[in-house]
Image (cartoon, rainbow, N blue to C red; front, side):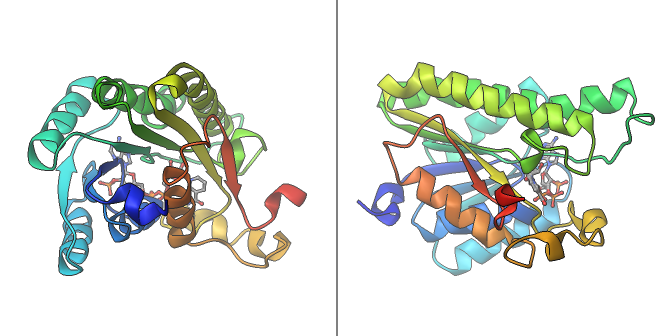
Length: 247
Ligand code: NAP
């Protein structure tokens, strides 16, 4: 079965789906036939633009505001998506922040905020969708990690910890939900051309990568679509990093 038939008439929620990597994932899932809920926190114009693009191509989409680090907002978002599009079959935990901090400059607040938005959010969103997936015996959860889960990276230790935690969450849920038709995987991108990556683009990383360039949001969207289409793939982290693993 190809990804298009797996996703036809399914409902997908993509956190931070309005711009950057999330937008690439949203467009890839919508193109494969899913109705998509485009979550954002503050920039409603970018969410509306993404929704309009999907509708223009004949798809179904809504924009839904919520801070994914706040339980009540996550629960309200899941209820609204279910009411307007239908029960959530596919969850992509993509929303994240990357506040660059050195070992000496990082504060407790930086650490707490990063863990809340990059890691706790995935737990809250997963809790909100698993009961419905379990009832229907089918679900797909994809968590957007980073090369920084395993390497040092350029953001900071708070970011490393949040992404390593996200991969632990992935494997823990995967093991416990596999028998119920729910797969849980992670994608670990290398540097991708988004606003988040802007301060890192000048570092010459593209020249050091075997492919000689940084990645695009579409390329992460393609990987997520492939994962969602494969019911035998679970508990894995798929690295999409231009050969960065060889370095
Ligand atoms: P981005 O361009 O900064 O976009 C971030 C998205 O997340 C926006 O849609 C933003 O919404 C949303 N968001 C942020 N905090 C949120 C919150 N508390 N609640 C709801 N939505 C929130 O980032 P990106 O580069 O696309 O990164 C997406 C994911 O990929 C992140 O998890 C990041 O850590 C990971 N990643 C990125 C790279 C890279 O090189 N870009 C590499 C590896 C991993 P608003 O527009 O409303 O602010």
